[in-house]
Length: 371
Image (cartoon, helix red, strand yellow):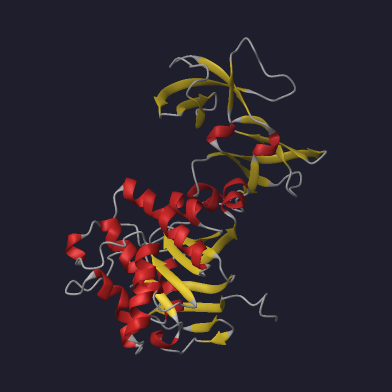
């Protein structure tokens, strides 16, 4: 494989057991050089264990891990050329900001002029050029996390690993740091693997997102593809808000599937389904279109629904709607659009291309990840 095509990190057939509990299952995963890849999933899905196996803190039960084309499955962490950023910052409280950033360089025997130049460069990069003489206790949470990031990249790593690094920050600071971490990663063209359970964080920061569940990789793709074309009910449910309509395919014409279910008749892009298949229709709230009873949509299927609630959310308004079958759906419309009164009846419809079909399977439940 050529150097340009060789992944920066590659996991092949990786398993991890803790006793009888299998927390990672036959994981195959490649991370491209310079890519920001996020491992996303709920607590217990295996994402942190996967990151710790790449770091070398945890040994896989089976399988192989390559970094830069070299098998590091049994290599100690200090020999893997990785940088690691933790949620709790892990800064040395008795060292100044500059000393924290320089720590790894000092340990590797770098010369003082090189250390000073690198520390100065990184203080500028993290936008804290005047704070080198302060101690961690004198910094805000966001500043401490930037220092932790600078320390992790002071000796340029082959791979930067980030384990829920923004989880301890408040919402405003977390949103700011998402932009900052991404800026620094792109500026240095670092290969980064990021772990989070926060879907918004994953969608905001990533080149690709790997959605995990029960130790398995459910889907890996761009944030747009994960959101708009989920491969399973689990992925659709985990990423963003979604409505589900269950049913079976009655016919397929011109790549449009006709679905019958408790909610009635609906149309979707076929996506390879055949008559008789049991399927789930996934509908994002923003794709539900509301119409007045007196203005039914032309050439589109529509369903009467009662407005149960209306919630103003700034730029959007959310409606809870109840179909004749009793099922409730969530709709999101622009706040400036027509307001629909609670208790009233509307017609709702959607464009078939916005309805995604996935297999009619239950959403798996996680039972927690072993330490």
